[in-house]
Image (cartoon, rainbow, N blue to C red; front, side, top):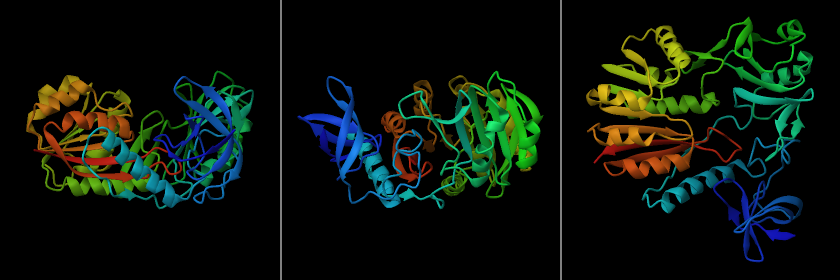
Length: 398
């Protein structure tokens, strides 16, 4: 069926109409005239995939990745970077407007590296083939490189078949020295470890949560700070944008003296804001992350931070009164409603909310804006070529 794409939706898909019924088409662009195959026919909408581009949109560009049309990793590699940035601004502003939040986001901070910016990749293994799942399926698309990760990771991908794994998952993490950590989730016996170690800069190999070679962590460096990152700990995938995020946080906490960092992970933000502060407390529920946080505090020779391993909602009543700034950096699911309500019952002057999901950010803002107002809201292109975007929001007490 022939469809003209009118605009993007908030998931990066093109929107068109067939017989007045809306259809969502991944990897299409406003202005495309395309032939589509309907793959889902729901009561209120259709989903389709591109069979042929009859007339390309003016914003389309050459696609550099040979896997793009099938891979589920990127959403927007078919449009220019300028158009991608504009789309993300429009997306977040649209979500704000639909939720009656009167704020116009004007700035998105660009990543200096269009490609090869990721320090982590997760690959599937099915019947000895290694790659990504095809979008919306569990069918494997074999790959031997990815435009989003650095060349050291790509060189390793080409050699992963030497492990002779049949089924499972391989995660590769890299650091500022291009050292590589391999995490394998598979019950298969690993072969040819010596070949991989000899030909690549491997600091550790972990299988099913057991370290079988080297270390189970990397040391990462951002700006002038060092961080131990365990194999299963969260850490930002884009170091360039992370550096810029750190500078933003530093700027907006320069007048703070006592800072509470909730969902603190391995302590990155606590450490960044700690200079010239009286007291910083980080709270995280993951025990291994708190162990890393304490190591990171010592690595950076900082003595004014305390880290607490606890569920955030269970600790706030004990520690919250003495702080002037709270940093929130929750998972994609956002902040627990009980935590938000406890924050609202305080007179803490400033909240810095960092989010990788604008939908949960806006959901939480609707509650916080009862007592707070937005001082600034900026976007960061943490996930270039995908529909995802990082948000940096500063709230001031009314």
